[in-house]
Amino acid sequence: MAYDQDNIFAKILRGEMPCHKIYEDTNTFAFLDIMPRADGHTLIIPKSPSRNLLDASDGDLATTIAVVKTIGRAAMTAFDAPGLLVQQFNEAEAGQIVFHLHFHILPRHDGVPLRPPGQMGDNDVLVIHAEKIRAALAMS
Image 1 (tube, rainbow, N blue to C red):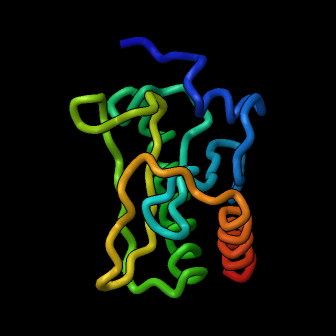
Image 2 (image 1 turned 45 degrees about the vertical axis):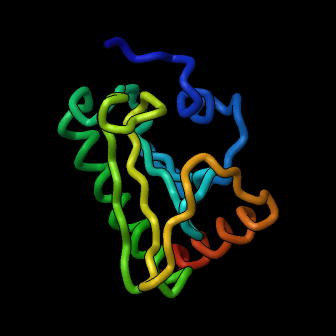
């Protein structure tokens, strides 16, 4: 299937939709999920248009996964989390909802269940969570 230039992440990259930005460089962009399944739930995407992992160039995958690692460490620090869940879905049958390659990072704590999917987060809380992760990034 073809890449849809009007998907929500493409719109975020073009500045047409707001987000809680965590990090940006030449090739990647990281921002909070507005329907967080855990505190600090962050999405990392390549700036290049790719529908999923199978469409992305090896170079885009390498730079994006390096940012996943960096943001993952910062999120664990920010939320004092002993674990980190990294998720990535390819096509609807595998659970992909937005058809722009993205990685989910979710700081995890023992005994704390994930929130159900599809529940909007509180914007004021998301602002605080973004600040916490950015502060942890600045310290690393």
